[in-house]
Image (cartoon, rainbow, N blue to C red; front, side, top):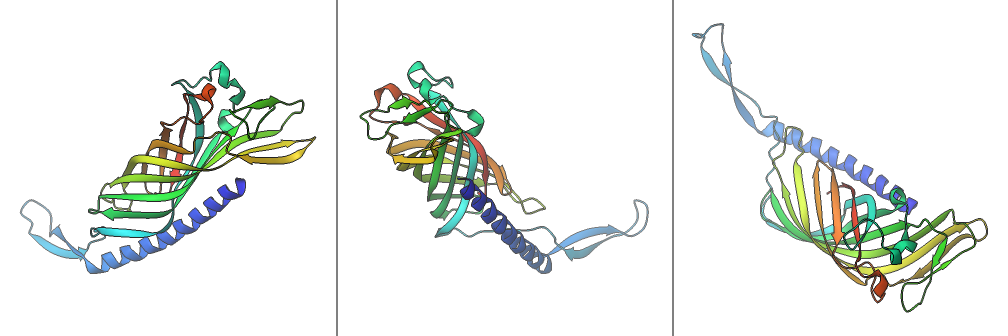
Amino acid sequence: MKRLIFTIIICLAASTTFAQTNSDSTHTSADSGRKKHVRVKLGVGDDAPVVAVNQPDTAYHAHKAPGFSFGVTFSRIDLGLATLVDHGSFTLSPQNQFLSYRQWKTSNVGFDVVQFGYRFNSAFKIYVSGGFDWTLIRLRRDITIQRNTPVLTYTEDDIHYSKNRFSSSYLRIPLSFYYRSHEDDRGNYFRVVAGPEIGVLLNGRVKQISEENGKQKFNDDYHFTRLRKGAFVRVGYGIMGIYAKYYFSDMFENSPAQNGLRNFSFGLTLGF
């Protein structure tokens, strides 16, 4: 996962540099093709004559035509914290105490790689996209979540894990309603994106590191919900913003003791 985060940061830096280059080029074109009228007073006093002088208009005027679009992308990169919500509470109930986790090391990472949408005007568009989303829970206790069990089950271990991570990966498919304000003098603008999201389970994983066993990885579905439903909102200025996501589906299925346990994530979002 560290390699993935580093790759995201490098790709984002490259895309930001490319976008800045294009922005500079566009501003130059706009400056050379537009004029504005400036009123200049010749002399001092109220009776001084005033004349109109044409000067280049340095403001950037962006107008995007309505229409459909489809393509590969690398955007809406989420880097945040994940929180478990147990029947509306941030405190885990007794039957879920084995999932006690380290809040600042329990994270959510995701990004989109393809999108299809329709732009109504320069300010509003709607699109559906596809990408990937990970929830990485850093467990406090020295336990091992068991594979291939009728319900979510764990065992207490006699060894200490320097890392005990319980994670899920999903294919995410959000439907986004996008609004942006007019651009300011720097070409940046305020934007809001919100909508529903569904996720299709790809895999569950337990990753453990200990002196006795070294690094171990175990893959299974671990009763993670196969089709989850939720909603999201992103708010930002320029390329950076904040996001929040809440899933109305339980985190686990076919495991009655975990009914009502859900996932809430929030953090920074880039490139949206």
